[in-house]
Length: 488
Image (cartoon, rainbow, N blue to C red):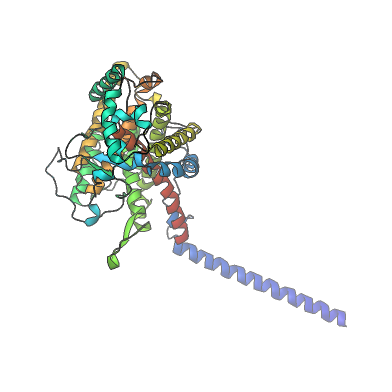
């Protein structure tokens, strides 16, 4: 009797358990379905918060490198070193003219927001070796000085030119003449001008200033519409800041780009990548609070979404971010190409502090050594590789368009935006100069300056800081990815 009772009890217990399981499964399934509908009203399976990144993957156009490889290489190998390098005195001080009038239209008036202001660095704060000019870059005498007062150093530096051999003087004179006649990709500021001033880049960081409206729109509009080889058949503005860009599908609109030759596609992607990088900096260092007399800066996720989210940009956001990676590869390739220039023993990043200069040179060479290990460089030989006359004409057109963009930087109404715009444009211009000077770099003499290829200190500072900004952008993308996941 008790066995029958026990069996009946077991059957009832099993039925009760199965019933609860089935009911619970249906309820949970219903909750999950409702949650998915709330989170994804369109039925998408990925989180809307991650839509900025869902297509940012795989191989980039016009090269054989993938996004994931660049992320790992940059964030773990390059970014920590380039950040430390650009904090060194040689790369910290940049001489620039911020008061040059706009050459294309009447000035729109300067930004009145206090965060637009750039604080110039007093001459007394500039390392004596930087103030002494380019001669001392190669002078052994300059690098043997130590334990002197600034006045003694300045006096000694003034005499260095007289200690050079006649052969060295002729080499410097030839270099100066060649440099003046060289085909630059940028409109270089005259460092001897009374309007040129040193700026401490660490004390004037690139961040959101509130500069926008007609002045900012006009600058970017001139860059995109007048200089990016836009076909006449394309009527919709390329400028992302344009108030109305029509009802064209964001990604489908760019079919015309595939019809351009490689060089013109590259030009557009460089400008778009630079614009994207600047936008990431502004989103990552945004003015969050101005209360109690103290400004609070930090990442603004909503601002980032407006500029790069797939839905907000009709699919263009991913293209913009990929163009950033493309630009990174171009400048990375330029650094790879120019490494032999800096690896020569007599080239010194001279500030007057022997120990500091040695550490700076060593760190720079570490960056170059890391770059050499990267397996997927952009192949610039595919550019301007057609008929010689046509290639030469296209190359000159490419150079003049970019040089024009460097001049447009003098039309930026915000001083801080102008500073970083000029620096990053000059950095890219220097990278292009390097890529198109391969033969001259290959023929560099080992123990003396070259007539065929030279870089001024202004170009070197812009090159490394410009690449540093791109490296920072890719590092900040990883931070935004984590923030979006937290908000999910």
